[in-house]
Length: 65
Image 1 (tube, one colour):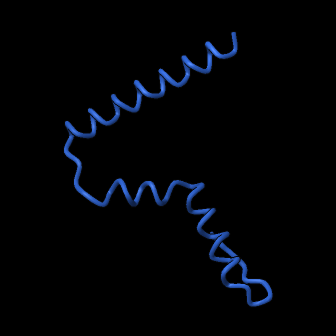
Image 2 (image 1 turned 180 degrees about the vertical axis):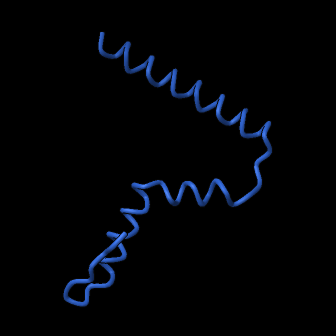
């Protein structure tokens, strides 16, 4: 990943870098690996996320009707 600093504007370059890292999911990945997660915890988290995704898609589908 490459970010150019133009006109000595380091603040703007940092903002661009942070946005690129956030878009790639680096921050979420760092937060996820901050603490150890057991297999059971991972399975429960994935199940909760799947249920939330299903409910969100269902709401969107019903809103289109």
